[in-house]
Amino acid sequence: MTLKPQLRRAIGVFDSGVGGLTVLQALRRRMPHRDFVYLGDTARVPYGRKPPEMVVEFAGGIARFLCEMGLDGLVVACNTASAVALPGLAESCPVPVWGVIDPGVETATRVTRSGSVGVIGTKATIASGAYQRRLEARGLRVWAQACPMLVHLVEEGLADSPEAELLARHYLSGHPEIDTLVLGCTHYPLLRNVLQRVAGKGVKLVDSAEVTAECVEATLGTPPACFVQGRVLHFVTGDPLAFAHTARVLGGVDGEIEPLPLRELARNPQANRRTAGISD
Image 1 (cartoon, rainbow, N blue to C red):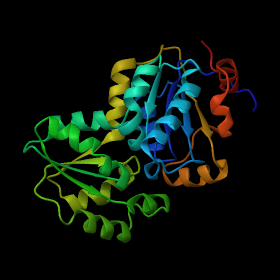
Image 2: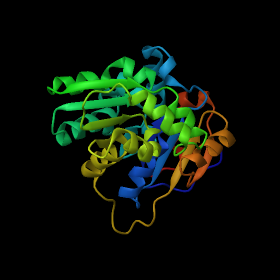
Image 3: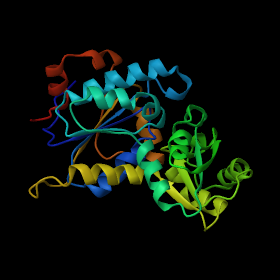
Image 4: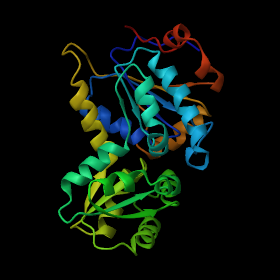
């Protein structure tokens, strides 16, 4: 790999694929002067179909690779990894670690008026019960629904299409009276218009990407005033061209894309730092 320009006070973000780019975009809107390193583990996507212990292993290797770059913080922009691997990552990483589940749960708890909350997500996220357990522990009534086909529609550029609305109506048709709906998948912010129409104006949509970005900004604050517009470096374990193609549907990629062979996730710390060119 070629050496990269020096990145300063960077924040790491990782996901099993491209969905975490919505979290990255939310972070950059709030902290435009920050540098970011995004890692998409597209060679092993999707995580949701893999055993939890395997996801924990994947997340641990990625976190080590990123944290050895001298980051200020790490964002797990993946619902599956947040559900099964976050406690271990928070304990082992030398920097603050955020997932996308707890911020969404906290926001839903704060904004609900009736105490009735809905959650939609992939099959794996809903089956894990991660959102449901946390919301119910706060005394809320929870309706949860897996929406397996919505991710495919988003990645095909059909987020605001009649097909998307038809599927959304199918998935939400059985929901009870709720006043808050948690978007428990990082692809779903692209479906906000459709989901709002289907759920109704009286239902508050909770975007985990936005509220996660709020939490990170509140903890880390803004970088020094001398920092100019932040930069982004993307690592991709799969095909960079395929990643860039799908990423364009989600708003594009602003920054360089570097292929990352899976063996690189086990490299030594100094090699990792040289690869990304991150300074102390």
